[in-house]
Length: 220
Image (cartoon, rainbow, N blue to C red; front, side, top):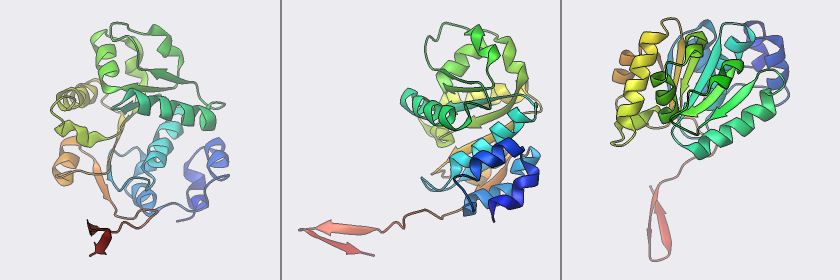
């Protein structure tokens, strides 16, 4: 699917930015569009690393911000990843939306975030904001959960699961986009999230498997 095929479905300013870098959507991105990405549908996207999951999230979040539907929260598991996403989003969309990074003090309500359109944070930070009864959360239209498979993690899993549960109760009309490269039970998770399931195995560089022994690799 060519990017121009969805030109009418996304804000012109967003299309102008993307068209400078992208001409054709990747397989997972095309599947996401057909599954209702641009129509407010919840999605669970399970595709390999570097296959284009982040753009799927951007299309939903930035589109909703520019159309005035509400704020976007992008949840990541690590502070380093949050900082990386912040730099990337700031470079690409900084002139269109107010973008903030919130990964610091877990004992602060960070009221200044009310002035921002896109907030990138860790699950622990968002959990803290909810516990502080942050008022601007009611204006969130899009929630993106990166590395959602960490729900199975002994340490972070319970926080992510409870966070998603609370957000679904607080934000009845939000669009949730959950992203992961590896999920053992995608159908069950998609049902729990009330989301359309997008699965694709395409990757930009073909993956070869083999066994290394005595200086030689035997591929299979």
